[in-house]
Each structure stands twice: as C-alpha cells, then as structure tokens.
Length: 83
Image (tube, rainbow, N blue to C red; front, top):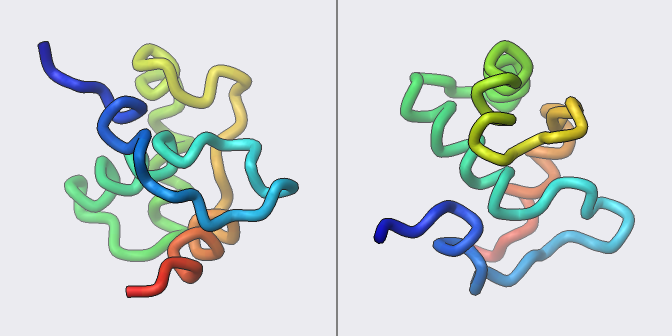
C-alpha cells in the first residue's frame, strides 16, 4: 500500500520552534511539492495555490480547519534547514 505524506515525511526533523507548529511539517511539504509540480515558483504562489485548492487538500486530510499557511510561514520553514 502506498505511503501518504504524513508517513513518508514522519522521520524528518522539524526545524521550527513551538509557536510555529500550527501546520504539521508533512502538510507543508506536501503542499509545496504539489505546488511546485503545478509550476509555482514563489512562496506567494504556493500560498495562493493552497487557498484556491483548499477543498482538494481538505479531502486529502490537510488544512481541516480551513486555514492555509501564508507565504511567510512557508519561507520561514524552508530558510531553516542546513543544506
């Protein structure tokens, strides 16, 4: 059986601090991968992508509370890892 994003990314170390943990790391990675495949190049585009497709993400178990991450949250996350 195929793994979902939560299972696939469960072992990743989350670089965020406690007050920035509203969105599970796997949901942010899944959103970003989906948006990049859809040709989004900037965090603002990924933010818009999430808002425009909120119902699709919710059907797949993400962003159930109706809130999607802002471009600031996404850029903050992807600035943290040490390449």
